[in-house]
Length: 190
Image 1 (tube, helix red, strand yellow):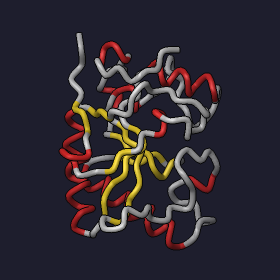
Image 2 (cartoon, rainbow, N blue to C red):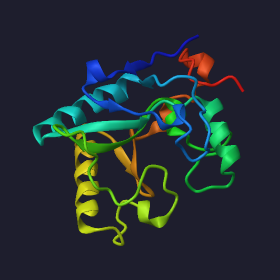
Image 3 (cartoon, rainbow, N blue to C red):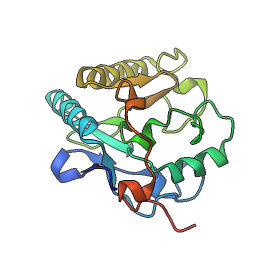
Image 4 (cartoon, rainbow, N blue to C red):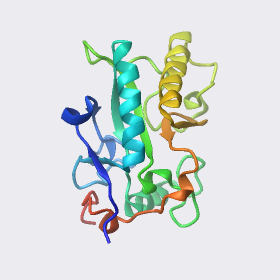
């Protein structure tokens, strides 16, 4: 049985999409998705739409780096970083991306497309990436709080150790999905 996931496209959702795991420009150094299609469960897609609307009123846009991640892709990440505090074990962890209810993103200027200063890049596994880390510049702290406010207002909760990660509350109520169960065909042929 295929779970119902909503494809998130630039045209329908007015977002920029750059799925890092569909490229070699990620922490593993290899592509772990076969294509760069982006999916979320409908509940998360509805919340995303709300965040998009709020950001637009401020002259901002959301840029998505990751959303639904099949459990097979989570295993690739776990194998690259076993025991990490930043990557969930696909066999025992919460794995909100594998449930289709988590998203990794940043804010960009709506006119120029320039990413706002956030103090670190995506998938930075250092303390500087923590939401409330005071070692990053004031502008980055303000932008992180702005992103957190937009996402919280839309119904997401933050992950304290990654300023870019947001998920629906009580994510465990959604089952973890394989690529086949989701029908997304995101995984690369290994």
